[in-house]
Amino acid sequence: MRFSQTEIKDLLRAWLLISLAFAIAFHGFSLSIKFLIPFAISAFTAGIGFLLHELAHKAVAQKYGCWAEFRAFDQMLWLAVGLSFFGVIFAAPGAVMIRGLISARKHGLIALAGPATNIVLGLGFLAVAVLSPAQLMMQTGALGARINFWLGLFNMLPFMGLDGTKVLLWNKTVYALALILSIILVFGSSWII
Image 1 (cartoon, rainbow, N blue to C red):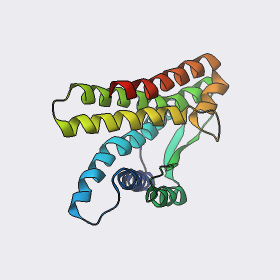
Image 2 (cartoon, one colour):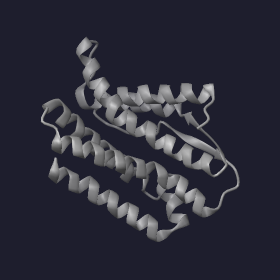
Image 3 (cartoon, rainbow, N blue to C red):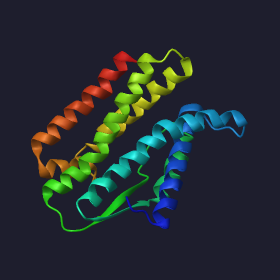
Image 4 (tube, helix red, strand yellow):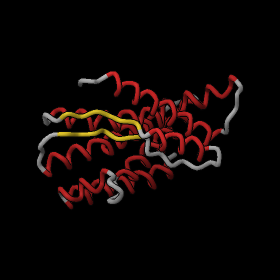
């Protein structure tokens, strides 16, 4: 993959602020050194989920010969941090901007790559939660599974320019299968964890 300096800065800023928002929402804010633990866990679970979601869009778009770069939405990032103080997570950290002539099928596959990545990550975290003997790893795995399954489901919703809209426009059957799988994973994983 090809990256510009602007894109790298935007990815890092979005990753850090999303991680901060999740850490504050789940654990509360503190200037104590102990806050680094929930921040690190959030960076590893939510932050990685966000980062790899966006990089999946980029990788597939570049595979199809498109120009693709992530751009952070700074106002939305700061809104996410602000809302996190009230225990609310609403994150629209940015998007991969894509230019190039592509078919509806390719556009749908580019869109599907992000939620599919979250599903795969969620399954990996679920395995850690179920199989790990260490309490911290079990809790981190459970959190990572929940966050990534929810990210996958949220992004499959067919509105506001989310990934689901593009997948639905391309192929209703693929959309329905991805949405049903996401719903099953979100609600089914809560019974397992």
